[in-house]
Length: 127
Image (tube, rainbow, N blue to C red; front, side):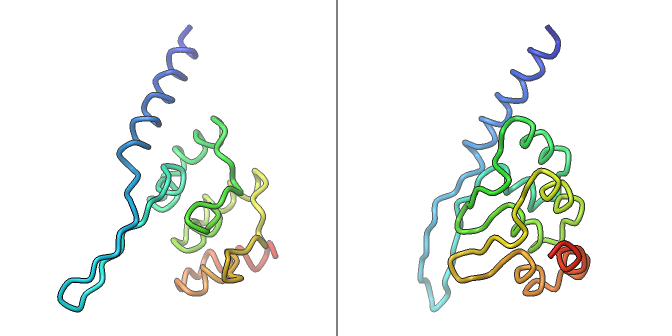
């Protein structure tokens, strides 16, 4: 009974977070400045924030470790933001290290572009 209630509560929280987490993509030119907001999902937001427990729970509830969101896989987000513990979890759960975005960049390239040294070292070992 407790597990059922806990699972229901977690799913309800995730649904609520997802409704607040999404933003629409909008590019506005104002006074020669360009502002861009991106739409992302709660799974990728948890990765960007470094919330390892949330990432593990979302994987447990069925989040796809290889699903691309805004062209990037969860592993690419983790590499870009130097989330080494999350990279380990994603790879253990089957994330494809050599997956590429539409421009041919993989997780290692995102780590290099962001100067995420720990992520680069780990991804080089895994490649």
